[in-house]
Length: 495
Image (tube, rainbow, N blue to C red; front, side):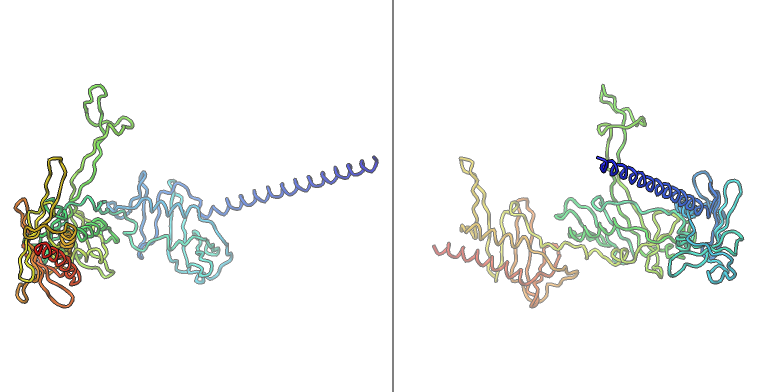
């Protein structure tokens, strides 16, 4: 029993010692934390001014100043300059939290730190007229810190982790807020017009076209437009954006080639406009706009509003951007050469439809075929018996033939596409090997002619003068399907 009491006393003593050590360590940690916080607070006072009213620094070798008026910043020597308030505010915020990494005292040679002739000089002033000056030197190549000294304290150099020189831009327009291109969704584009000295063209939404689009050249000659090429052009027009800012108030347009633009781009598109309405819940009658609180979806009316964007394109700048002007704006911007060249170098021919013309089988009255100087007539007859059963019969020269063979040939003719279009076509040379003459139930007629060209291509031409190059293997498959159908017709004829 006595032994157990000794052990219990020893345990209590040990526990007391451990608690004592714990509180000593805790108090020490708290003191160190307080000291660290105090040091952080002290180190954050490199720039002590608050409520900064004015800031100035060098831009492209010229000292420029901005003054805060209410919530905006104004350029001192040009009140019309569209200053980027957020950017100036961001610079001040960065400077205000700047802390020193190291302090170098008793400095005799400022040249070692790029401070004999500072890279930049920043002066800030608060509402009470108090000011501080930051002289910015080089960046340490090893640590990335920037050397600086404050006010007239030339013998004390600080290093800060901020890259102050990259914080300040070299071009005044980098501190400006310019206009932006309209936000256009490609699917809302209805018309794209490109006016230039040669090869002007208009791509337009066309409900009468088989592809939904038509394209016209500068002479007004209109063709069905290729749906894929039309979609690509819509995407190019919708994705145009400014990459450079050259002037916020241009008066000499000739300096940028915009007095006589190389190209004028006009894009017609639509936007969805949502109008808030005040609706009488008893009568359901709309009384007009309401600004009182939120409105439900029932109280909103949406409509499509037509918009037009006009863009003038001038000379090509040395850095690879075209000078552009948006409508009647006084600003000059730059758009990448690659984007503009798609429009500038294009022509109506580039957007011609590549599909070979045909009539849907539901609209077909008959198809007259000339193959190897022999003529055949194909028909599809749809009948309904007394019980309402639909029966479709296929004929060649009034002889019933296999429906699968008929449809296989018809589908291969309907799916034929050109690898490329021919801008000019001459019918001189070898005669056609195959001619398809579609007669429609609505009196529409389509004629397609296949003419051997070389080892790789056939020339295909339609009744509207459109022509193109078709892969020889595709025509070979078409003819094979026709021959299979005609062989079936011959077997039926023999029987």
